[in-house]
Image 1: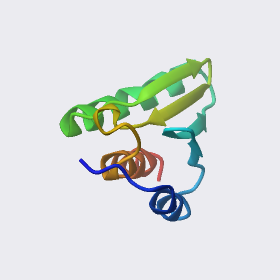
Image 2: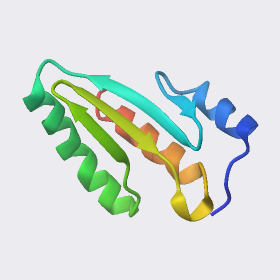
Image 3: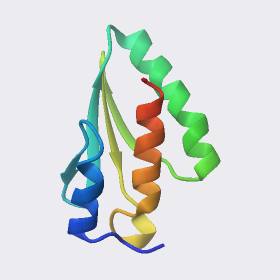
Length: 93
């Protein structure tokens, strides 16, 4: 899988609300009412990530979930990361 250039990444991020470039990852923070909602969100992310065989790094802080995406094999961000980010966003629309 081809690693995206910084220009390509920024072009994609401009189309996506809330995602930002942080080094070799794209990242978004999701806020929920409480811990239960945050965990339920991650439970919805899990089957999507499994079906793509591409898994995000996540941190959960009570009602806040930070999702980071990168393709380790490519050494950076690929189309797979962008695709998964969009699918994660679709969970909340």
